[in-house]
Figure 1 (cartoon, rainbow, N blue to C red):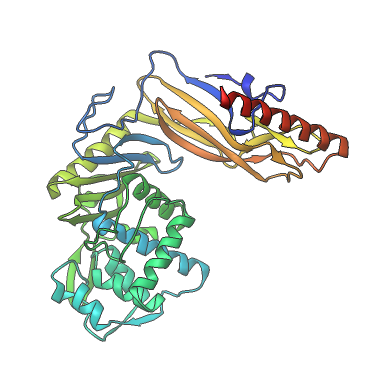
Figure 2 (figure 1 turned 30 degrees about the vertical axis):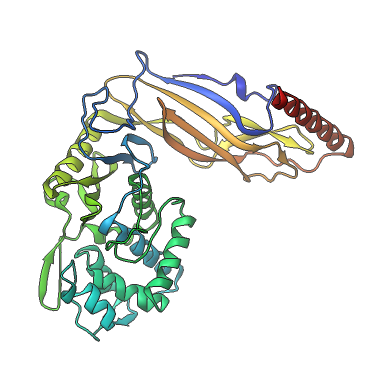
Length: 413
């Protein structure tokens, strides 16, 4: 693997702005290939894989590396897959201690009538005015995709479903879902329920990594409530070795979709497909994508978490630059039977004002496979840089003023 780091040297000329440096990383040798395909319609990539789903993405759970994508940022109705956001909000409250699994909520007439048996949709068959624990409501929401389960949780936690949706939205933004919008806790048809397969995959990865104590719920194959036994709606659980989650969804507006995850040979992949016309197609598409990923990819390390991979310009510090290291090891998935050309860019807003603390977050390193983003990892300052002497600050100020004048002049040309 060859790494060109000349543009990241402290002696380089760094301009104020977002683009701070470039690393060209070549893994192996041979022609350039691209694993990701953001395309309209079915299209084969270099390995011959053909995606029929209107929207699809395949992600490595450990690194977040994207192996395949198609219309991954297109906002669509997520249907019951949106329940993952409801469940994440509950998991978060459990983790912070603001909620207990033994806590109980009453089934309102609204939840029973609009989410339970009378509504005719997916339900855990909760009886009106009965009292159910958070633990059992989570089982109903995850295994049976109960609309009533989600509505009871929402009303019990926040007082109303509308208030819970506000909490959901705040949680979504907190974990980096910037485009998703929600109108209810269930995914039942509403024009304001919109998610992309990329953000669904990001949500699934967050659940796996953040809540290992609760994730096994997604792999339970059945749940009985009110003497009614229902099996898990995830078709991958019985169709693919290592499959242990997540969630299916269907509405007339959104079509058939699913989020799935499986582990094989120590590698976990997450797949999301949406917009298909048939339930069998969504299962076969998800299974094909997972099998293709396991067959064709392996994980490679690009940078250790203590490796200096670049420098950030400092304004008004004792030193002019601070070294940058990744907050976690930077790993990316590459083809087993070929070579992938990877491009890594360090992106930060600079120069960074002094003082800079050791460990302070300073931008990101983003790795592209071909034209598509494969993985991104936060960068932190490896050393502290206190405020420098008055002369240093004056020189930095003059330098920034000169650069600003040059840019203003160039903008007028």
